[in-house]
Amino acid sequence: MSVPDRPRAGCEQLACEQAGIVSRVQLRELAVGRARVRAEVRGRRWRRLYPGVYATFTGPLTDEARLWAALLYAGPEAVAGHASAAWLWGLRSDQPDPVVVCVPHGRRGQPTRSGGQVIQARRLPARVHPAVRPLGPRWRTPSST
Image (cartoon, rainbow, N blue to C red; front, side, top):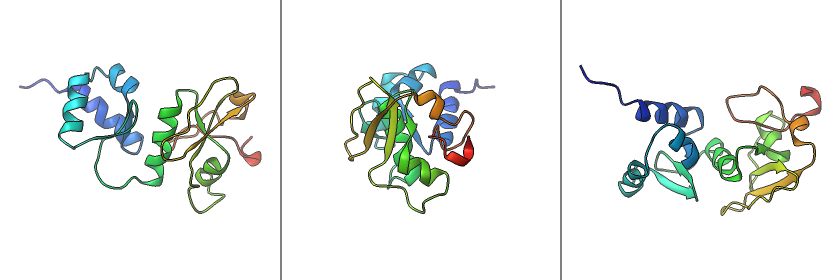
C-alpha cells in the first residue's frame, strides 16, 4: 500500500480553490519544494505569472485566475477592490481590465505586469466582507454591510 503524496494533494486542492493559481508562500506551507516547482515550470505544466505566483495549468487565464494571480502577487492582506469587487458581486458583467486590488494604506503595492491596479485603502479591514468565498476576499458593497 502506498502512502498518499500529501504535498501534491494539498497543492491540487489549493489550486482548485483558487482558479488554478498558487503562490510560492502557499506552496512552502504545503511542503512543496522549489525543485518540484522548477520541474513543473520547466516541464511546461505550470507557468510563472508574477514573481512567486504560478498558474498550475497551461492555456489562457480565466477572469477568476487573473484576479487570484493579482491578489496573491499583492500579498496576504490584498482584496479585490472597486470594479473587480463589483464584478464579483455581479454588479457589472465583465471583469475590469486592469484587475483592481486594494492593500492597507501605507503598504506599497506593485502594479502587476499585466497592468493590474494596486490601490492603498484606509481602514481596509472594515471595508472587507468577512466571509465571502470562493472567489476570494473582496470589498464590501453598500448592501452587503
